[in-house]
Image 1 (cartoon, rainbow, N blue to C red):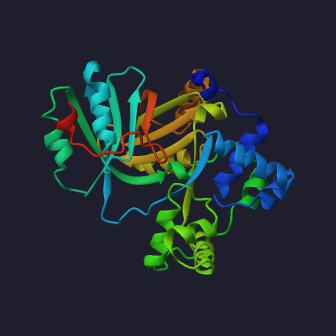
Image 2: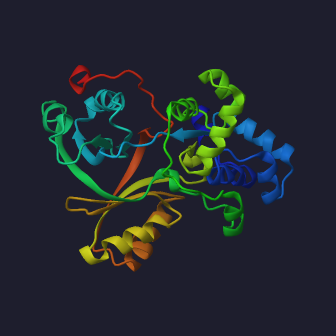
Length: 328
């Protein structure tokens, strides 16, 4: 029964309300209702219901330190050890993304690491693990789009523009008060200022003013966490492409604006461009590969269908940190 409920597709009204939150994580019910043609009371009631049912929530994304880069890992693993290794990796704070392939023999992950260093996980822990049969690690050279950039295609361009607040200068300095507020908003970016004030110990008026400033300058980055299946997007896939060097940037930029793409980045390795996509079904995935990628002049494609999204922003089922060797 739980699986059936998880796969139930939301109606158009609720999908549009989720799309509105993607434009502005702290959007008011009054403004959303004005733009979407609903009463503020209906908007508020449906947002409350969606949050209470665990369908969606809005989180605040932490800023990534400048010196930290990232690698994309593909880890082939013996099936009997898959769960143990996945749990060990998911417990690590330097692994923010983990997917398991639908075939059940491959883990795809993103590892935060300093560029040019011999990462201990890649060079020591994983090769020494008997459950691992192979590891590839490609460095991310450039990010064209992140998951927080993705917008569900249920709003018109005019609606999206009306709901997206203008962004000012993002270079302003943050102090301890700002950091306290952002930390308090990590799990619930829509928390009222009074609740944030109570949690941080800072005056209510200060918190209200700081939240408004952080949002206006783009330093309060929010993301709506929702199961894509509830939006009718039943296929989650990673698409690895080979693109000629002179086409890499334009193809990456084109993919960043594609409605199916919720992540796109250039990497080292044989596949120099990777994209994470959500589509309705296999027919849509086939059209994405043959028509959309074919039209961009992509030279080669490998597609990995995701069976389980284990760890992504807002989803972290293994809170305790353990070394890989502790679990496998």
